Image 1: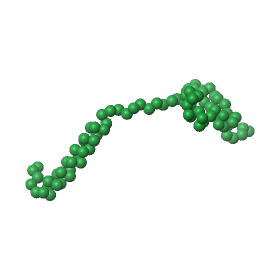
Image 2: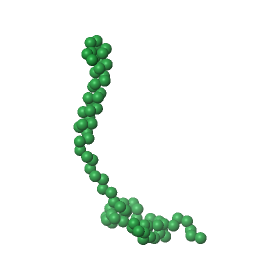
Image 3: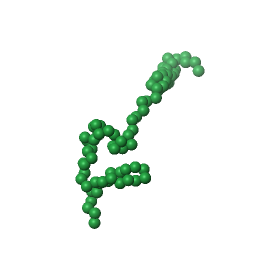
Image 4: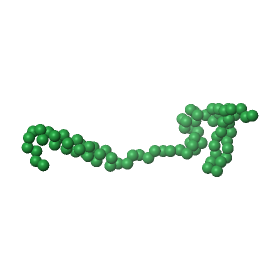
Length: 83
């Protein structure tokens, strides 16, 4: 396809230039993998010096306890009175 008129040249350039810009962006922006995210299993696995312990202290809700389950220890808090 040979572009002969100025209208055809403009149309062809409007089709090709955005594709070239997108291809250049994707080839330069994504060659490196992102840094891994540090995921903690629970609040109990963090040291006591972490800021999360000051935000969520151990006695935030009174009357709670711990339950030992097959996959680990869980803190439970009864919000309603037991009958």
